[in-house]
Image (cartoon, one colour):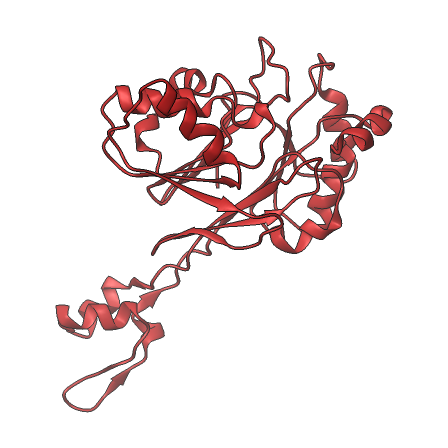
Length: 303
């Protein structure tokens, strides 16, 4: 099954011609998730050929505008395009009070059910779950209440080893038991161990998303051994005092967290518009953690 992240916006508060503010689109096992929704996100969705009517869940990290100013426009466009599928929006406690009045004052009676799930700060809980994936939030350390998210596949059922199944002459009725991990006993009393009838399932993968946050080792347990970590790197070390003042991270900070959490790959983004080149961000981070990628608008990463 596909587990793929599309970076829709890799910049911080001020949009530039090269970088839109934050938004990520995640496809995980046929579940479609939008994380954060900066101004212009629906344009980015179109630009990068993402069918936004598929979105099942929207996750908002916090209520700084560069993470949610595009939400009302996106919800409205979904309505205008005939959406009738329920949409879940997860985010800070005051998000619904900010969004619903804008839709109501403008006379929008949405054709689809819009459900908000409010997250008191700090929270570490499951915000969405079904038989294939689980999404949890966890607290970050920013100027206002902010949560990160991790999206994880659930451990799949065992895959049938068709050659072994056929060799033993088993019945179709045995397949559900085999996939659940049970041994099979034949009519003659012979027991066939389950491990001989199945192929090992793929190891579940996890994507961790840390939006605006200062350096905090408290987040490490929540993102431990993620296959992919996105961590903001708004500033370089030469602007560390500015990072402290604004509760943001440097590229080096992001790399230290990635190393402590033993993640497989790190993407850094949310770059301040003061920078025109980003080789220094990559250099600072990769001197601490080897597998570092610079976020770019339109980048697609498959796990």
